[in-house]
Length: 280
Image 1 (cartoon, one colour):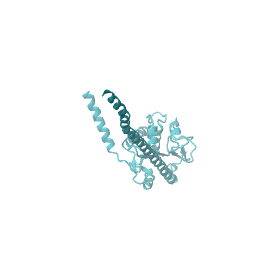
Image 2 (cartoon, rainbow, N blue to C red; image 1 turned 120 degrees about the vertical axis):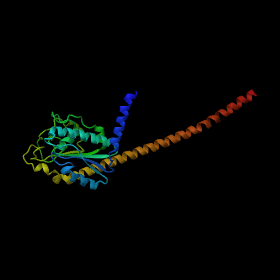
Image 3 (cartoon, rainbow, N blue to C red; image 1 turned 135 degrees about the vertical axis):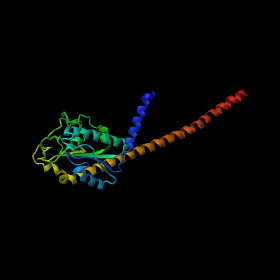
Image 4 (cartoon, rainbow, N blue to C red; image 1 turned 30 degrees about the vertical axis):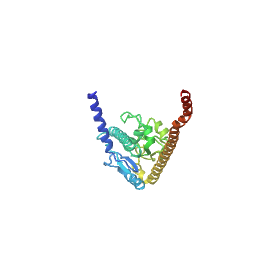
């Protein structure tokens, strides 16, 4: 047993060390996936995340550490790396901070990364084939999923926003998981003419989502955060009330149990005395 126990123990220590390096936000933990070619950091979406952080105290903006590259590595490899990194980051955060609340933003390639992370494989060979994040994890912790100019945009998705009526460069083959589970918290912004999400010919459109929709998105995310916090508080209050009620019942049962020996003694005593009298 010893040879196999050591690697297991080492793995556990490594997992705990990784989890312990995560800082839990008292507010909202925002994961931001930048677009192709943007410098390391949160890219154009960072200003939106910072605005939301100003409205939700003690929030954290976490740029996704992935290549966001077109050719080095190639786009498909970069996208695969992004999906894996995003899923690992969100899973680790949820494990370390089970009560934490998360919002995810993805622009351009980052939008495709976020879509694959939550909706599962887009069905196109070469891109990520990883399974989607567990629905239970998302329901527990994710308040909003926001993507802009997503190349895997699908025209008929119910969570779409913007003016586009066309598919993107790499349209998803299946939107069922997100359609059935995340329509209430997910928004995919794509406008007519966008080169990547609308197969248009206007590169400028692709860069205007934050300026055009930033205020609306910020309000949406803050509202979703507030809604989840109210539900969490209500659930905690209900659990506390149920525990108090159960404790009171237990105390009552214990009190009754404490009286039982006395009652039994009172019942047995006369009979015992009668028997004792006969014997004497």
